[in-house]
Length: 637
Image 1 (cartoon, rainbow, N blue to C red):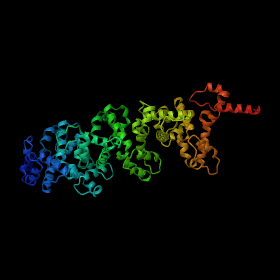
Image 2: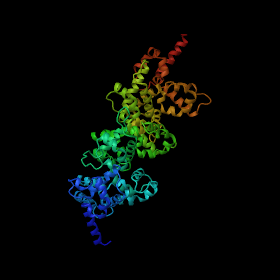
Image 3: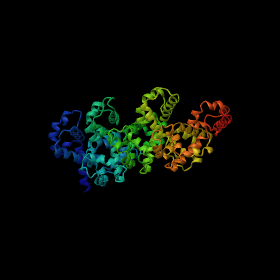
Image 4: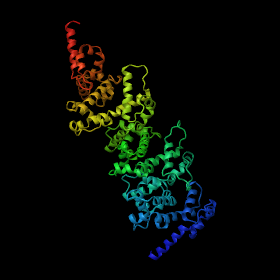
């Protein structure tokens, strides 16, 4: 096409953008619909001109409400929406509002929507900062052209994603709104190509800032949004809610129980979950988080540029974040603990384990923390890959920061925590508080335990999970950090291997670490279910010999069956290890301690006087009792 012809066409397009009636075909095809739905300018005196954008917004609003607009008119609208998306110069607001950004970042990228996508890239923060008026002009244009309703309107996206659509989304008909959702589901998978990824995220940045721009979400949730979130109609410009406010309201209602009152319809809830899963892929797709965490992202997470790393980084630095950012990250983490499927990348990494061991809980419409619990329990299955294991452990470590981040624990124990552990926030401190209460009530043999039965059951789950990795016991980990480097270099954290290594190298530990390890052993000997290594190595033998034994008598039961012909050699070796440990201090032998409760102070008080609360007596009390026993026998007593 010659330059003169192109200029003439561009001039005509600019005139049509100012007054749609200049396009004879558009005016003729849409005349009846404009009149029927009162979209003609006469009905709206505020609109001084018959702007194309006004016509498009008015008629698109009609379509979004489920009314019928003639196919001829819709065909014309599609052409002109594509036209506005391809050439930024047809939108005076973009020219005026984004002049600086175009000059500095996007010069020379005129046709096929490239300039607009360049501006969108700037808005995402990938090429400098964007002025508010430019951001606003882009947001308005995206609503006018409504590309989420038909991805083909966005030529830059269409061309970049053609190969992905042909392979990953070929089951969806061309132009269907579900194509964008399909592309998002394949983001960061092997089917996605880099160019498509960029164009997709640039467009989704704007769609995520106005819930109405996702046509499926709007169709399924408009009633709920109006009823619960005071949302206005699709084309009501009086709406002054901040970006993402309506969607935030919808997802708060999505997780309400029947007792909590007003809930979302099933259809709407499904769409809200779809959006949450997609947003988890990129912090910038969550307007609230990006706005409130911008400075924290810059301060703590500048180098975390890979997929999903930004949210993980914010969770790792939770205690360092500014109050507003900490709140929004905390709320999302709390939500993830109830429905870990929001973590789309983790779900992909854990697919083999979910299919093999957790498919029943994964298929539940309401998760309630069951899926994460299942993944933790199966963390050491042979099908487990490194990405999934790292992701699961990371979430466990994040859970330690706040009691709210463990949904099942929170629901089972919230009344007990309010009553017995008020003002305690960290999960690990709540576990210690409740465990201490249970232990004291058990030792004193009180009739009515202060901790409720449902809380005690879930508390046991949490204690067992924490015993698998020293990092899940922050006090022990902090005390032994340097010892781990010197005594247990290259030992993996999982499967309690570091804890076992520290026990074996106890003589070489620093005083502080030694004390903590001794206290841990004392706890494990009183309640052997918390001895992760013993329970793992002797799992089959416990089933065979000790299935009816309670957690306090497991080691005693195993000792009695140690020389059985069917005893597993590895388990036998582990039993011997624990017996040697018990002989170093009577406090590590609860049965001996209980049976000799009266005799120890009677015959061995001098040793007790010099004893330290958290250091071994190196078998002195046991030797003392043996000597006294010998004397009594020889004296015939």
